Structures are given as C-alpha cells and as structure tokens.
Length: 111
Length: 117
Image 1: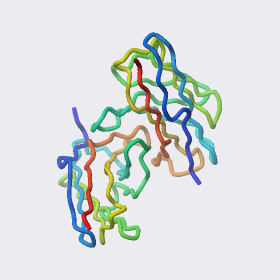
Image 2: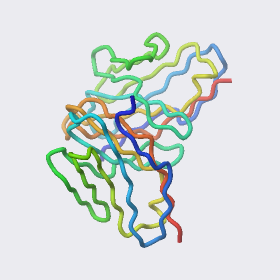
Image 3: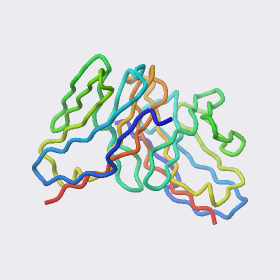
Image 4: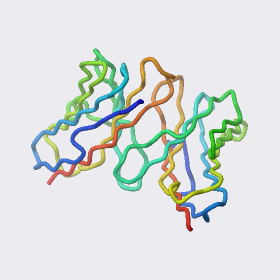
C-alpha cells in the first residue's frame, strides 16, 4: 500500500524555467509534509516543509503547495538551475512519527 | 548545524559475517533515530525506529534478529547486519530527529553502501 506516490519517475526542464514536482497521498491523517533532495550515494537533504493547516510555504526559489481536498502537493522551483538536478522525494508524517516517502522524481535541468 | 554522520561510508564483507554501521548526530542530541534502506532507483524504506535507552521498533517484515539496533546514547545509534547475505546488499541510511528542534524534521546521514560477496 503506497500511501505517498510520485507518479513521474523523471522530469526534464530547461534552465531558468519552472520545475514542478508532484506528489499524491492517500492518508488524510498525514499532518506534515516534507520535500527532500538526494544525490546518488548520499543521504537526503531537507528542502522545505508544510503543515497540513497551510496551503503554501515559500523559501527562496522553492515553494510547496498543498491541496488537501485533492490530497496533492507540489514543489515549484523557479528559476531552475543546473545544481537542482537530483532526485526529489516527498515525505509525509503522521503525528511526528515516522516519515513515509514517495518513490522519488529524478529532475534534470538542461542548460 | 544538524549534521549526521555515518561510518563506514562503504563496506564489503563476505557472506555469513556481521557488519556494524554507526550513525552519529554531531551537533545536536537525538532521542530518536531512524534506519532506512534504499534499493537502486527505489524509495527509502523505513526499517526501524531507534529510541535512546529503549528497544527499537521494527517495521513489518524487518527481521529484528538480523538487523540489530542499539541506541545507547543521545548521539549514537548502531545497526548491525548479522550473518549477512548477498540479498542484504543495499544502501543503508540513518536519520535523526533533533530532541530540541521541530519534531517532524529528520536529518539524514550520507548513507552506507553495503556489499555482501
């Protein structure tokens, strides 16, 4: 039972344009969502998070949107830079317990 | 801040031997640490939650006698893969939750690549 899904395994975006990564979840009890960035053979790095009581959180070039009715969240990166090329994981938390991760989306930024 | 280290970063061992992986929170105290496993091109799968001073909580399907977890201090948790087999070859990642920080965020170590021959 995959409670957190990232249906796009890969995404290619031109440098300077907007990257939009999507994530769907099934458990309406999740109360906190996080996005992590991961390079090969390294641990994930925290990017940005959002509480379930909010619908938007912004930090520099990164913005996360949450649509609770659709059980959907997205990460927007604008403008996209070559250093953004990595695998992005969304994760959901239930009551500050364990994190449930999606499958990841490999983002490639083309010059 | 919020740095987590893992040692070793890479280990090769023979089938039947045991391997210990260390996870340390370098600049914060972590009452709770987590151990994940990642197969190639797949998501991070939580193996167990490690609480300082108590027994670890294992996820369904994870053999507690095979993957021994010890969390003896607020900055150190260890994972020992006992009687390792080739199918245990994987990328093992730990994370730690800052005891004094926001409870939802976990800080990840760089991972350990285990290869069992």
